[in-house]
Amino acid sequence: MNFTVLLKKIFQSHDLDMVTGSIQGLHQCLPDQQVEAVISEAVAQMASEDPDTFIWLTQATVSTETLMRLGESATQKASEQLVKQGFEAGKDFVSHPEGGMVATKSVLDSLVANGYLFMP
Image 1 (spheres, helix red, strand yellow):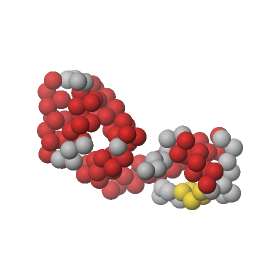
Image 2 (cartoon, one colour):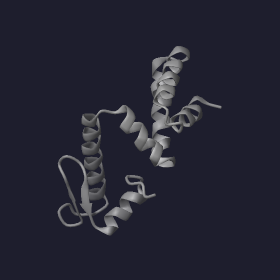
Image 3 (cartoon, rainbow, N blue to C red):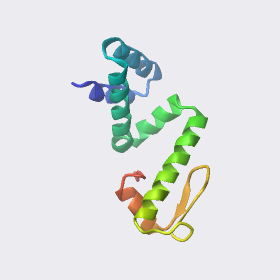
Image 4 (cartoon, helix red, strand yellow):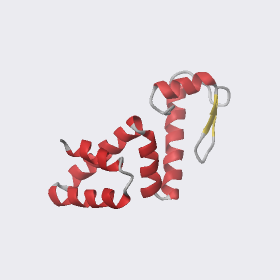
């Protein structure tokens, strides 16, 4: 079993002490850059494979300020992608400067199809 798969299983335990201990253990057997890569890959996979665990993980480990910055960044990137696809800001969607968006169904469908939104 590779480290990414193992870490995903640990994330799914929703046990913050186990997650923290496991990451500390990874730091003892892998170089820091590899640990960062394993964590990044595991988190990215959780976002698409298990959104509930991804949400738990971010709420348990990321500050509110950081979450706000991530929301702002995600909204900006999604807006840029939508404009490239031919949607019009102000007509097809409206972005909030602190993150979030009001959008038409076709815009939402595009966001889901391109992995920007997860629909349970």
